[in-house]
Image (cartoon, rainbow, N blue to C red; front, side, top):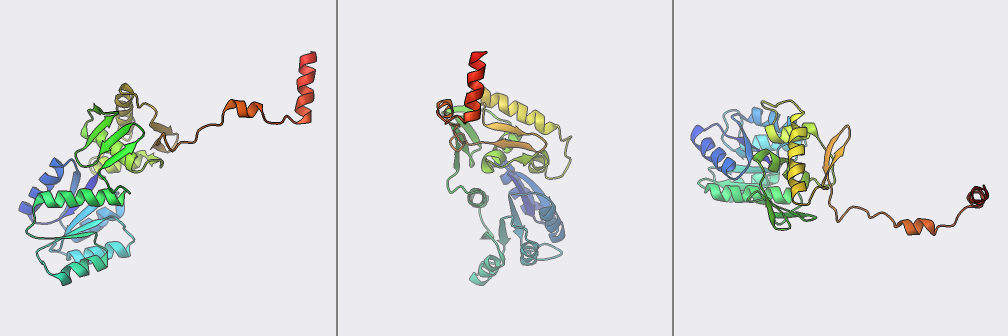
Length: 254
């Protein structure tokens, strides 16, 4: 899942970006409030981490602007103020969490993971789709307890499909999810990633999860939620209209 971090201080931004990368997240850095707002308006981020001391505007102004623009991306506010009033103000403006400095990066990562799970409808870090199990925290994938070794990009694609199962995702959405609008390769690279991912799933008996939606992109189905076709026997037991019965009789006579 891609995350935006808005911070202009080199030391703290480097430490947090490194922790996010180590936890398996792709992260972009915005060094001003305006830059953060534009990125969040135009690209699909799973979450934003915003400090309150950016040079052009404070974190509260950024948050208020985002919510006024109907940007629903979850936001964690990082602040050097640890008072109830500051926290209440942030939550009233639409923050999803608030961390006061100094905090441990491990705590920030845990909060990021929890918010991402909840925002995608998962209270638990384990996502199950048929025989496939995806751990949103440690980025592991198994099929019937058999591990599948995926690259970072392959996991990110599968993660997006699982979190939005049953909803077709365009190739542009995948590109944005993987690259955040920066240094994007040709869109055909998504077909390559999907092909490799399908082969790895097929090798462990989970080949029917990802379907192509022609002209749109790809979709992941939950086998347990897919409608089961009615038995052919039921069709044969349906009453036959008189006209069809006469045609059948003529065919037998011929």
